[in-house]
Image 1: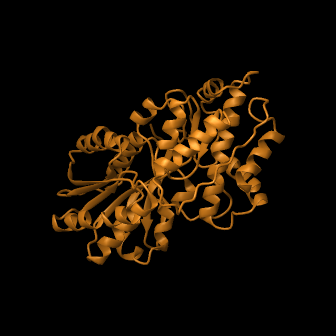
Image 2: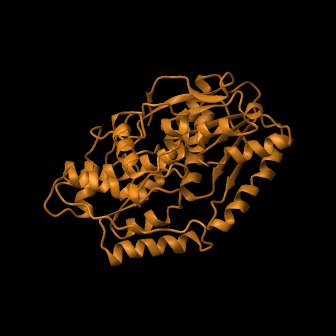
Image 3: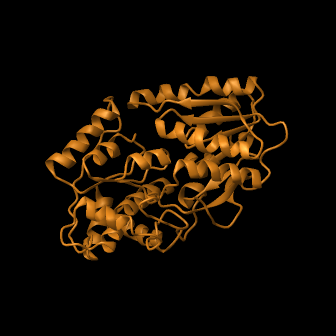
Length: 368
């Protein structure tokens, strides 16, 4: 709890949210519990909204949308920093109280990924394309309404797609990962030459299954696949050559060398270092996400500093932020009532065989 408390203390030392002191309510969740995620998140939602009457709730982990949906239904802002469960335009339309300052909505990232891959010569004549995506409503919507049409724009089509059901509890995680083996083998048997990941976080597992079968297609990926970790894979030098993608969070895209991404990231890192727990890049990402999800609330309060700071008033302020807020996670940030996901720019990524690492291959450019 030290890190979120440190950010809240920093905010209160600098005016709180619209001049109001921030009081944190902290709920610990046991990640190893066998209880269904829906049950656990309902308990959290009830505690926050019934016992404490919060105006905003923050979830930085990659949990299902259950918590955000419950908060939304009760008129409470749900701020999420999750990167491996991106939401679709359909999700944002159905959940007007949902905000993510560091995300690219899935429809936009799917289109931007295909555009980038085409622009950089990833696709070749005669390619058979495979896709991994998730079964939830938003992912399916983005796959059907964004990725497939964008491929068609370039005369391309999906040969075979596999939708993974997101696990409903921690014990189901192993089953979900094991379910990726059969479609990987099918893609090999059917001669799939290019595999795209649409916001799944499954690339490491799929490439391992492929390597086990000496199957080496080329991969298209985004920030959601945690690209910088790929250089740590034992099989990286065999499976990663030719891989390309797009990224919008440097701390997840490439191995970090100081300084951090921007002034906001430097500020967050300084706050979090004082609270401990920023020894490696994974811890720095977690700390940066805590900082981002709390700071964006302060930015919203500054846009609408009313005497009675309700959830509605704070959301109205967030929807007015525009480009005035800089997320520590992204190259550029834009937030409005119709654009409640913050990341507004991306960069092309590619695997570099010289360093066995992912590198940016373009300057930042606008997406969405």
